[in-house]
Image (cartoon, rainbow, N blue to C red):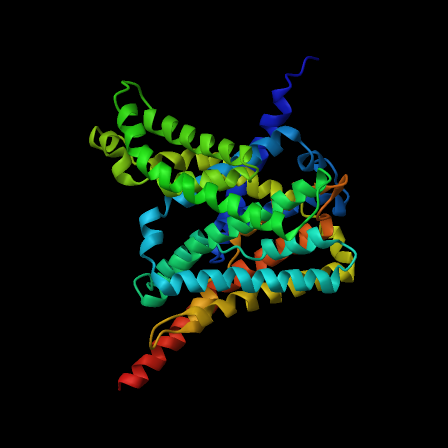
Length: 416
């Protein structure tokens, strides 16, 4: 019987999309972000072999699904970038900049330390990657929690959100430097201090250079595109802009997600005002259906690749626990950067804790890094990182609610 090569893929996609929505629904019912449900259902599908059923094991290695998941990451980072703007980054103030910087340095140092302590034989590249993976902060999850609590307009919330945006930028620069160093090592080079500095300079130059150039060029690009008399032009040009910057980032030796994130930051509502004035929806609305298809594929596939069997090894459980503690403490350090009288440093530190989708993106990149034919991080490290992402994301909503309630009580008492 003839079988079209796409038939197995579309069946896998049908399963993944339905499972993702069921998982997201259950997570929402439990008061958690949808991403945790999508990740959790992926973990379930990927570990059915532990119950004696291996019919879905192909999801772990399907090359077509892997490509769609990678595309989903690029769309996700574009979407995250669209939620903020370059001008917002420039207005967040000294506190957000210092908080973000400490929120990268602290977790990176602690993550590296955990790697050296518990994985002495893993090698320096594994150690620095673990540190890089702990630097992430999920802007989307933090913003959603603050909105649900009705605290989005507080000074602490503005510091948290501004710092989370800058944290993503700085974290991507760190990630770019780490992946560049690993690529150099795989090509036979070495991790010299000069090489690391050069990689950071190159990553920063690309990111901030593309932001500066893009802010200048994007209004002209979209004004020109608005002359096209065709349907779907705004979405097509927006995605083309994202994909082009993602490609340029790769050509510069950086992760494509750096370019996708930069593309989202660059584009602002005034850039495509002409489209909106003639009746089209804004770009962030148009991208939603694309993201609704591709992004869940990424999260479910990440879950599928998480091997629960490795947790039979007590060392992996110890690593997951140590990484989680380091992730939480590392973000509390950033509270020391809050500048201003009467501001609550604890709430700021807690707000920076969730790793969410950004942490998963970092962990996934680690699976693709190779030195001398050997992966930089193995399945045990990847699974421990996924646990860290889940725990930090789950704990933040109730912890932030408690912290703001404590803060409100203390302020009422002081004013009485």
